[in-house]
Length: 327
Image (cartoon, rainbow, N blue to C red; front, top):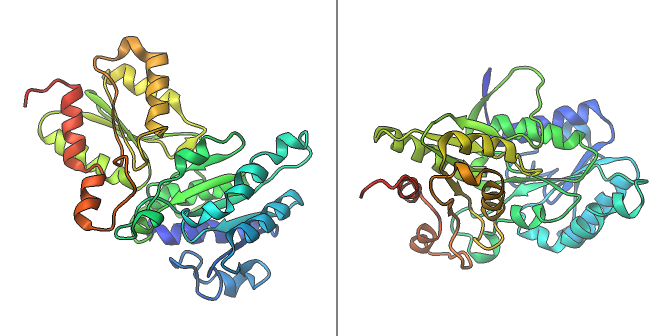
């Protein structure tokens, strides 16, 4: 095992897959000469050249359309967005083309393409640069959505995404690129569609994904000090959703708290809550409780940022609420 940064996991996954398959290439803003806005493609231009590591204009709709067309013709593009907030401009190509071409062509065209970049808030970037988009894209048939929370999952899921014959969206975070974690020395992949039980427990299930997993795990540690055993599930993949792992856990703990950075309306937790009550209602000893970002555009002021996002104390309180612990 060896320790690497999250950004290095991104780079290693892309580099290894490009060495194996000459059809894989990377394009996006500043991915080549500048080594990536977050240095996640450092050294790749030197190794693969400007034909396979391509700096694009600031024109998300345009270069995304080029990449979708390339995928339809047998190549395997990786499109880096400097942030998923900017990818709103490319949503027509992602939603109306990449997601639908296989069905509309009667199976004649696969679209093996990866769209990746940082998602959700990253501090004082204000409302137009701080949105979570995993629930929006997970709504669309034909797309797969993954949300790695650590370097191990980042590398393994990105390699799986590059090899996948369908469009895969990889949601990262500016706040995670410097995170460190252990990965194997050799080749490995993490299957798309399989959640991970990050911590086993018996009293309550906490489901989360992405960088706010840190909050979930820290809260579980705090609860442990008070004699409450929390099982923490890292979804890793939003679509397809591994509901079986969640149901299995709820049948053991009988309580569920969900934690995410999306807005509350039509959130991932909304879908989870529906499926749990549909498939494990008789096992629930309390209503499902969910924690999300506040239902308002994200602020710039640090005090308002702190108020808008769930923190460790919120998770601890939610767990005690579903356990009917006296305050």
